Image (cartoon, rainbow, N blue to C red):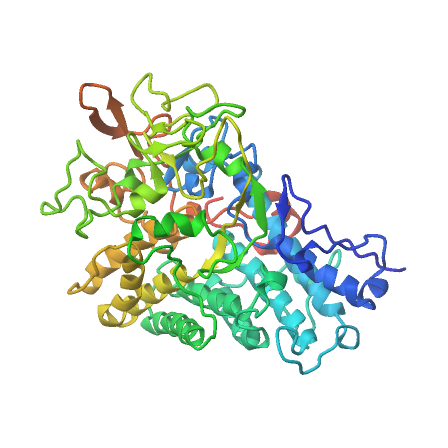
Length: 589
């Protein structure tokens, strides 16, 4: 019986996406047999392109009507205004293994991606693709195609181990043959491998192929969005960082931290030797006040900071769901992602001191003055200026209670006193446009944070300062120095939270650092809000002559539920456990 190849189209998504390269626009004729597909260069190339649909994508949730907000809304960083948003089941712990929507989504998506990558690796033919020594991006093309598929396969494993913990390694068998499970294959029904071992396997996979790929493509117009060597280096560094963290390294083996530090340093050193290296995005070295915001809006693709991304989303959906709710015209903004006061408080004062430091100069009744400039570049707050000037829409954001223009409307509003500015173009609502949006999977800023954290944990602050201070210099914040390991650990974690917000990092960082352990909702109330993970806060602004800021619990959801060890991971979907009982369910589900 002939096998029919059943790959989905890479770009068949819910709303308009576009790739900048011809490669990513290829599709497979679903009526062809495997022999017909892999005996054709064009069809083989199209199958590889289809694997890119399985790349992680932080923007996908914004268009999904069950969420309409970034995934940071299932952390202490933000809340989703939409009452039926499915993140609430994660915040309050009401899901189980039979009805957990994100568990089902990430399990199915990534196991399917792994299977298709292994099908490709099993069938791609050197005599069809060619493997010639050439100058430029297409050197040893067969090796490069296989390397791309292996990194994509490793990325799927990374999502699975991050969300589910212990995981089957579905790589190559003992003979080096990619594993493709057929129906009733007994290898499927086996105990999962320890998460730390899976993370080490991911790192080793990347190490094995990272130099079979151009570190950075010389022709990025044609190859933008494709896995390159830099992405393999970056995934290796992230996997080893997660492996070294408390969740996966309970004895705090510092050699694991050193491996993570070495991997981040290897990226940085290899990058420094490139003709066109990755760098932090800057638009004006003399005025850093907009460098961070512009990284995600002015130049969101072909960006020298972005190492790997999903395809471009050419939409105004991001603006529609994130802009404060009072802007209207042909469209009405919804403003459904509300950063918490917990998150806003983590921004230091411009002098580099946390707001709870008595010498910081922080005034809770003038809370946004003299703060880390990334606050204004990431958050919309009461008094922010926004709106298209040419269309006479430019005005102050009014989040005063209860009748402020941007407080709450029928379909949108704020539960915390804040909205999201990161990724949002200042669109006219009278004459709306579409914009190109790209959310990074890996960017150079993360590499610097990975290096800083790993070096600090491996050997203390001395080697860590240079990396975190490079990020701070980009936005004009003073450098760190003279700290203990514990003090710098706190600042690195805080810097990571600010720098990587709404990029799908916080959910994993909270867990790998085990922030929920050794405190409860009641015991943590003596801590500054930015150090609390159970209690969620907001601000109410009453419109007196001078606005009065009253800080207290957020609306609707004021408390997160976290059961240890259950909530460190999602459950394996119950349907899978029934079919494959030897996988074993995660503890507590």
